[in-house]
Image 1 (tube, rainbow, N blue to C red):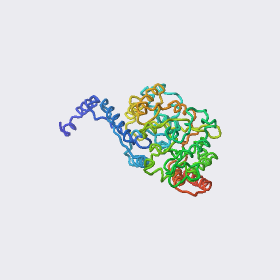
Image 2: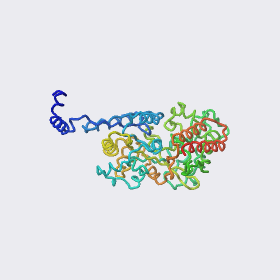
Image 3: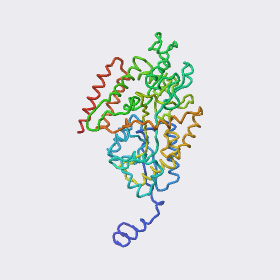
Amino acid sequence: MSRKALRLIPALVLVFVFVVGALPTSAQQPVKVVWFIGLGTGGQPEQQEMQNKVVEQFNATHDDIELEIVVADYDVARDTLSTLIASGDSPDIVGPVGNTGANAFAGNWLDLEPLVEKTGYDLSQFPQAAVDFYRTPEGLVGLPFATFPSFLWYRPALFDEAGLPYPPAAYGEPYADGDPWDMDKLREVAMQLTVDANGYDATEPEFDPENIVQWGFTIQWSDPLGVPTLFGAGHVYDGQGNAVMPEHFRTAWKWIYDGIWKDHFMPNDAQVGSDLLGAGNPFASGNVAMATTHLWYTCCIADTEWQAAAIPSYNGKVTAKLHADTFRILKTSKNPEAAFEVLTYLIGEASLDLLSVYGGMPAREADRAAFFENLNQKYTQGVNWQVVMDSLNYPDIPSHESWMPNFNKAQDLLRNFVTLYGSTPGLDMDAELDKLVADLQAVFDEVK
């Protein structure tokens, strides 16, 4: 029927609209939900393969929703997402993302509570504390998905070669010689495991720091404020508008700086980027004896020549910084209900598949046995997963991922500071730390 005829017969228009409205959903175009990946993990080839598989499985079983992936490189993901939001072409779901990545977009996350209530989604499947972790002044901005304890990774073969006992397999145990397993002992052992091309270690006078072929220790892939938490939890923002530098942070950064440039048991930035250290993946290169990082690092180490141990203490206290990732929905989503259905699929039916490549321990305690069994198939050496789980007992509170004013600019300052000390010998670290506090204060003041 022509449009002219329809205008002449209004009653038929009502019938036409009624009939179209009554068409089954399957006859309509599916709603598109865009999933943005890049603010956290998810960019490795193995991860992308699994993510694509998860999308294919979802689309094969849903006629009403079409799930689509957008993957941005981690180094540009923040800027990419900012541009998409500003242009009005924002995605619906973002993740997996931790607190640091999420804080960069504070104020943009949808409160999920109304959708939980509307759909009757069962929150009791998670520990209550895990749910409360995502309750903020903005509302319930996420649902529990993955936790990533940090722990000490080490290479038994390098200890055997040096004739040294392994690090303690459980928290509270001393080193094999009876000394406390603390940061001083870590330094001592790491120097004995740092070797030059002539076979001398870093404790020997003949040691050549210009020709190191094996290092004793590194902090693998940490965000800036995660670095000093080996010496205790803390933050550079006091919650009242002031930039601060906790004394144990100052001690930690000077310890690390000396470890790089004076004692030489930690690689500098140029060495980390070398082929000898895996072009930026030092522990996986096989030429670093010990590293601290999170469980998510299983994404990026394929060999089975490593083992897990306890993080050392400082002043009698252990701090094992903790990461937790989830998926979030942006307030700008045009289809929040469809996005919520996808989100619950990702943290539900697809969760074990995704966690197998993300390396995250399931928030659901009932899923953890299956998760570690999957990892045992990849790592056949018999990893000490108990010490990994026990690391959950030593989280950094306050978290190194806590919010601070002018978050993105403050993060850039901290990243620049880490690059400075990792690439520049001869610094006065006290002066540089004082300057960092002053620079952070100026950035905080910009948004007062």
